[in-house]
Length: 439
Image (cartoon, rainbow, N blue to C red; front, side, top):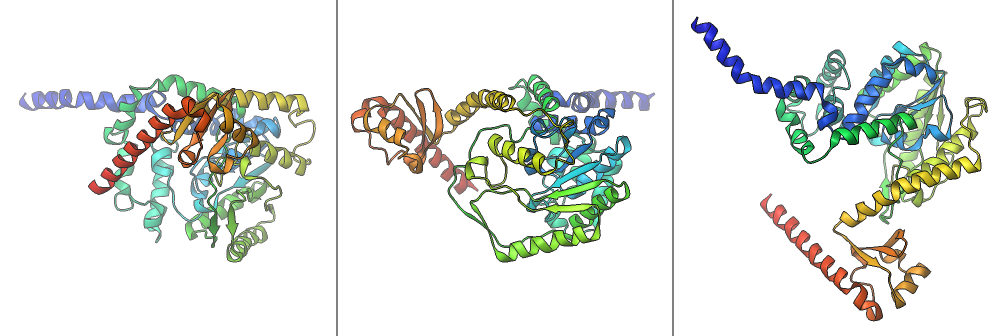
């Protein structure tokens, strides 16, 4: 009798925990962020018979998601690239796909830093959303455990990765509590449902749906191209699986911003890696960058924006007319293209404006007058910080230009805005300095 009472008390004490765990397990759309919604959609589509509608599939990471836009390529084309993923995860994704459907062609694109072993998206995105089943996750954990690169694969959690895996797999609150608390402040269910509708409409592409331009003038030097032994092993498994299924593979090295400079050593090492893959698997074609893009075609140094992805996708369609014949190609008349571009512009314009307004390092100038207006019109201020954000008579001026603008005649129009902005910048800098000292 006493034992029964004790068990009853234990169950009553654990009931709140079980309720929270049940909510976490059954309602991820209500507390998860956009990437949670994407991984859940990805899981659903890869196990759905709907895949049979698509003869061409994209695998890869976020640079692939940004570059390939099915709307501009073909009606039987779907982008299943998974942001922050590696060849290891994509191998198991391909196995899922082949259980449902055998596509005729697969395009594969990875950024080089997702080939060096670091699986930064496995815990925070894949395990958080339970993208893979227990068997797949256990297999990945086992390979990681045996690998000599464990510190590289799971930094900074390489000493506790099994512990973190158990927390994710059992839906325990310590992992999910921050998202649960934040979801009370945002209507995430509604936002995630709308996001999934957009994914279905545009067949997987979402990263490039922004007009943001890369305005950072800093140059980056790439000196070495490295692929870890474990990632290379699974890359070859992907190609071997495709070869066995008689699937054509196009490994496309995507264009990067002209602000990146490649050393001769980097170019040589990259060529050696892909020549080895191409020679070992007869169904593989390696395609090096075949289109020249400008910095304004990129959101950052790696990801194409809406303009760059449009140019790349149309160039890809024209390059592979045997894969995308006219009967399977989306009707891309000039009117259709302009209509889609206008839609994307309207969709992103106000989001970009709000993003910049919320940025503490921007000042807002409305209806500038006199000399400042003339300098903006001539484009003299572009290199001093005024970017291409113009909404009627509203301009955005970044922090680098605050001390450089001659206000003079237009002082009465912008003095208050700039003064308030400088004060906020000083306060933010003081807070960051105080935080670093506490660290």
